[in-house]
Length: 242
Length: 241
Image (cartoon, rainbow over all chains, first blue to last red; front, top):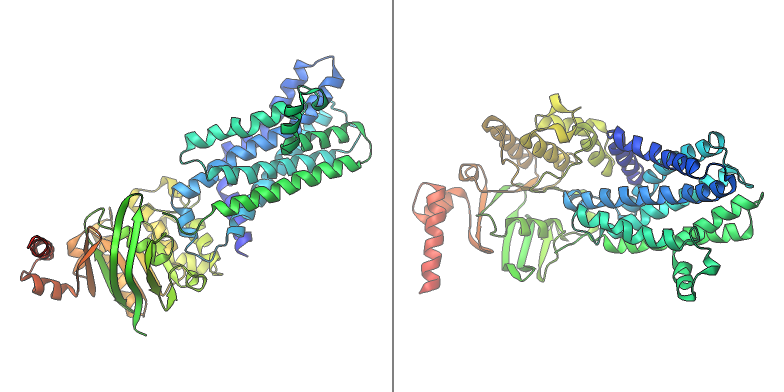
């Protein structure tokens, strides 16, 4: 019940901020359109890059939104106050996870639908799987955002975590250089970064008509990473502070 | 059991500074107790320890018979932080309803709390668009929405219109008359006269714990400002001797 009203509260905050909603929904679609024109005449390259970006954008956006939202809870005193009420840590963590997961689902659906029908993106597998993996990636962004907000004292610091968390994952996920062509130590790093798995899962959907075992394994790794990030995030939420 | 709060030998360090050093006090149930002292004297730290969000080095804080911060207390206390802690991007009503829902209460409880703080006309406005005084009343509405047995209010009347301030104090008195315990910090001495008991604190030490009349009598003056000053001077003389 508390979880439900917390989800409602977070979505309510979003609802009063139409510009943010607009940015969440429109920006990934615009960027994928940009990619479309960059690779005009090379549909195979566009298919691959756009598919990867459908997983990457929700991760970036939700990571940023969540780390700022959670930082605000900490700095405005609402978190301290909530901890004097019956609210549990789970209510807060899952509240953010579900509320922003819903926003991410809307974002991924619009971006994927636009890519398929307006930009003629083609994948062997279904659009539903693409959206599912994109949402899982977005929720991973939420979970890591909750965790990283604990290490930022100001908004300036919080936004600096974005390049730190996102850039290595993007560079090493196999989009720019195939993972198997990387130096061994880079592959090792790539192997422990969750985005490598979500990009591989999306690639599987791109080339196989039916969901593959590798895709399910990768999705499981992403979900496992979400759970680990949430548990670590819960450890940073302290009822008592100095 | 007649005490709402019992603090024993409380030591709190924040950074390298010892804010409270062996602080003890007892606050009776069904009273309005004023916590008075200059900025930095340890008022907020004491209140944070009472509501259970402050890391304490040693000592005990017992609230309504339970250790401060323990789970059963979370339905029974209301806490108003010094800076308004409400969601600026929600309306007054949405904030109050959210906090009401945490206690399983319906919108009617939220509306009552909003009315008690005189914000009914502004209930549909975003908190971000309110004045400073309205914002802190929105925050107060969220603290009283559950009709807590213990209400801990950190400077609730700062920046309020005098008429409203008077009404808020009437409200605190009514809550206490109904059996609630109100612990309220302030540095406005004329408000102190409306308390049942006063705790005067300075540099983390308790200087006086008495009724307003008792404090004045002990200091030998009829003005609380002057009484506070006399008691501090007297204490410093004792310390120097």
